[in-house]
Image 1 (cartoon, rainbow, N blue to C red):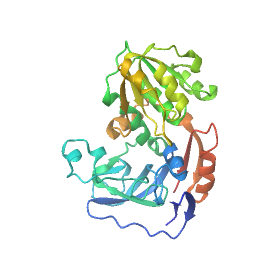
Image 2 (cartoon, rainbow, N blue to C red):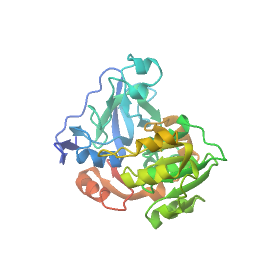
Image 3 (cartoon, rainbow, N blue to C red):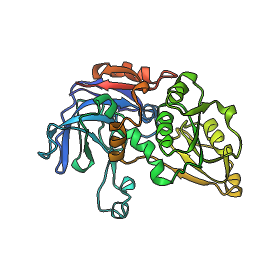
Image 4 (cartoon, rainbow, N blue to C red):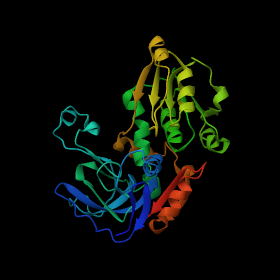
Length: 317
């Protein structure tokens, strides 16, 4: 089969990769569509020492697995867990001590004709969700995780920093809480996507210091963190939604003095994400900037790294 293989920070298209054999408890999925995200781009830059097939945002059709899943369109949670460690036993399986992570940690990913995942990770995609829309299930779930970790009320003032792929989805899902929301970014055309949905937007100078109850940092850079931090009132909550390629310098004393709650946030609830997409509560279509075949995968990655580009999709079949 074909696949985009990463090794020593070099990405190449291979056409002679064996089709994987699913081990017990796993299913073989023929990939239909997969999205390139910032984590994939960071992996090519050495964010984490991964060797193998990249990709973790996908929709596919089950070819081998339980009868109720065969020939069904599915999406898949990316953490394959052991079920036995202390985190799995306590209901925190996304932090499994022995987990592999699709296309990120010790498990080949979705930028290929086929992949394998545990059956328990798979979720059937409702017929009314188009395949390219369902490709966003994983990042929409990650955005929704914020509201699994803290309760947002209509009287809360919330700031989202970043107008990229992640910031767009976080903003749309946070807006569902009815809170008083402001999204700041650098690109008028991206902010216009949110304005069209009735979400208030602006640039960094629109942020009043110590005026927000919650800020969500979605840029992954030091300047974005600084904006999110200065926006918070004492005893406010700072949610870090991005992974950072390098070390981040911060004023730890100010976090103590202002009694700031710091929350890291990543993987989220797939069933809720599918429900939100099926009901049209989140619009992902404006985020799709390009589509490529898997054979054009290297060009797709080059396009995805272009400044200002949002989501680039790989269509396998």
